[in-house]
Length: 171
Image 1 (cartoon, rainbow, N blue to C red):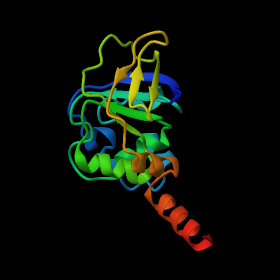
Image 2 (image 1 turned 135 degrees about the vertical axis):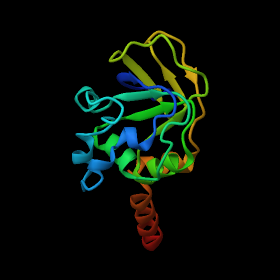
Image 3 (image 1 turned 180 degrees about the vertical axis):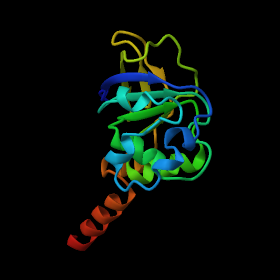
Image 4 (image 1 turned 90 degrees about the vertical axis):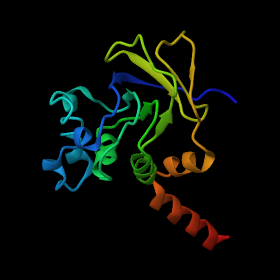
């Protein structure tokens, strides 16, 4: 299997980044992902929305997305153009919400160190791997199951279900 590396700017967060830090309560009334993106991670640091760009990769520690079950948190990250969130572990409901809206996640159990904010980094979701240097070693994570990758490829659960239903009707 040939690697499918995606390159993006790397940004680093710590452990226990909760949904209030990802999407603060005052912005929960916003309706679309792009509007949410203007405030994403501002509960952690008000400067975050200005740093993030399309195709960027977030590296986090343990328990990313803990806290409330708000879907606004992964929607804001998706609206900001985040290509993938790589974390040592995810809160279960955040993980499920992210899959439902088509936001790629990668579990990388070992801590990531030696990175500089804004540097280039690479992910290969299919292989479950990440790299912080083009010629550096791949850090092996846990590749999402094929069904999860299929849902992500369809941009979320509902588009995936609709595509499957349409395929079944035309068969």
